Image 1: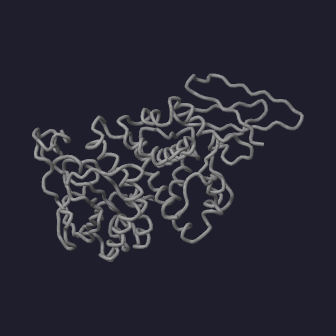
Image 2 (image 1 turned 180 degrees about the vertical axis):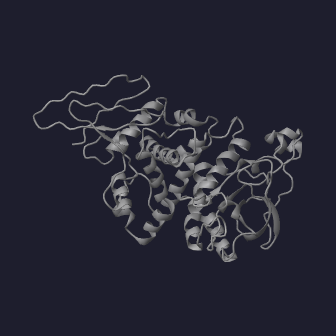
Image 3 (image 1 turned 60 degrees about the horizontal axis):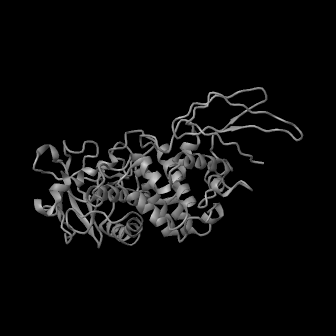
Length: 425
């Protein structure tokens, strides 16, 4: 229905809510509801704060005081043009342009801040909602999304130095430091959804949540590479990341969060999965880690890899299978093994992360040399039981003294579970 409403036969898109030549200071009304898509609109007046070649930045007029200035927004728009837009479109494709203004709307609104509950120890940095790609009116009322803003856009956290929204104080410096990664992330979601809807029209659904989130976190990593002047498959370690202040800053602002999310998986690998049907932080981290590993192992021009994933008519594991090969289970088994074997001397290449030295990076982040992979010690005459979520992994460690012999047995191993026996020393 959305495709039909946008077709030339149906008259194409209506006039853009915000034209490409909008002047700074222009007021528009936008729905900012991030919880309910097509009903209960939270209509707010927003002011056009900056316009660039690729971006229109608008600011909610009810945002807290002492936030970004027009000069700040102009700088954000320029960074979007030169860095984020260039990286994301090269790797995932161009977004649709249903409103015909040739630009993407970056909406800075305190509605995003309100999504973080009082006393939470986490925060929502932004969101994209596919509702804005659907028509507000359609030939059949049930096919419309009345609350749609009918634009390529996403929503972003705003500074709140006084903690006006739910008591969370976000300084301008903090919000500025997370903006680029968030914009790269949400823009990937916009590209993925809009291309499935209006470009790759054999697709019959949006991408599976876990894979779309994994690709969005890949977008953050790719922006880190572009900003730092580094690149994939260089086995970056703590020394590399501390090489210069610009590299260290880029890692802190665009890459370290991927390692934080992957750490949540590593701390409980049996209870989590890279393809769990959710968007938990552990799932996101594992999905990014798997995609990075799989792209590195596949080799070749990884830009083509990301484009194939983002422009497939398949979704989820079927999409992964099309791009990385038919034996998907073996890919995930080798990835899980690589989490243990990365940069272990003498380990085969198939059990390595060519882009990152995981132990070195985590040792630098933690400061104590700690690697957060959970494992269980097996003792002589003892046993250990594990319950695995599909896609999860359990790690059992044991040692055999010099000149000694030991036997290891396992039972009740389902055919869907793979076993890998590796030597670390």
